[in-house]
Image (cartoon, rainbow, N blue to C red; front, side, top):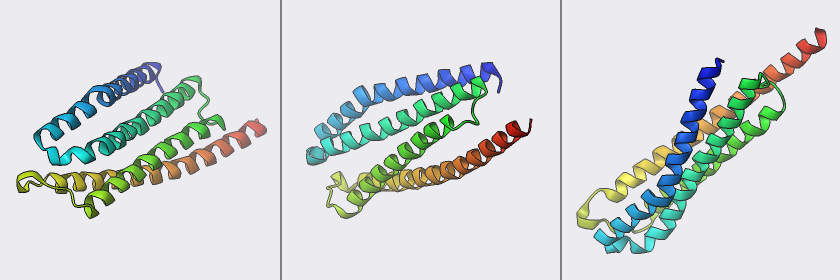
Length: 165
């Protein structure tokens, strides 16, 4: 992979991690506070949902750190080594945790009696978003597991080729 592309991807990863931190520190808590101010009935749900949202963003950040590590390995030409499996396992773990969080939120939204101000579709929309997030997270985790298997096979083949040469 061209060095410029790796550097551009690393810059994008760093930027995404920074935006995630801004979201965790500023956007998520202030948005929750604004919602509770407008709709006091959301008060008991604010803290748990803020915590889950911050953890969800943290899962994305952990995955981005793993991508950063994999990009470094690509830059060094060492992607087909056993070290790469650690980063891929981190990606799988982060996506699995994020999926579990989304499933938990979806379950809570589906079965809890959360008031919806003015008969709006806020809760239903949030439930739909949580279900989509859980589906995307599960699909990403499964795809990454498949890609890990391909990486394992490619690493084994490269090791065999190195022995022959």
